[in-house]
Amino acid sequence: MGSTYVSSIIKQFEYYKLLGEKTFDQLNDKDIHWQYNSESNSIAIITKHIVGNMLSRWTNFLTEDGEKIWRERDQEFEDTYVNKAEMIVAWEKGWNCLFEAITPLKQNQLEQLIYIRNQGHTVTEALNRHLAHYASHVGQIMFLGKMIKGKEWQSLSIPKGNSASYNQEKFAQEKARKHFTDDL
Image (cartoon, rainbow, N blue to C red; front, top):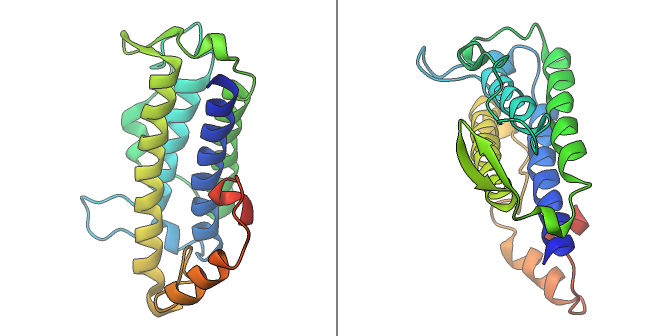
């Protein structure tokens, strides 16, 4: 299970990273700061939170608590990115931290106990927890992007009305073992 699990979860993380980036590609500097209301988060704020979480959780994650004393979580919810380019630099830094931490994992490390706020998790549990966490936030980013762009939004999955042709194309191919993201 080990190497298959690690390679699979890396592909899943890469998929959500890609969805975020395909959303960012459709937005401008003003768009990333748009908020539905004063209590909601902008794409910039959500991104800042994801990055802060990644840097805290994945820096020395096998030997240090995932909630670092240097993390300023409350400040992650302040919109401070000047522009989209600055936000994307931070986004890349967070994802690089994650991938550098998990890519070298070996099967015998998956059951190792690590801590997040003194709560023990196996490495597998921590990976699953954070895949779900980041996927939920990327979903928020995509939803906001779709709200902002309206009819100009370019679908990141099967566009409305194209399910039959998409399925026809897929079923015309030979059965094969591959990850659903291999064609992206």
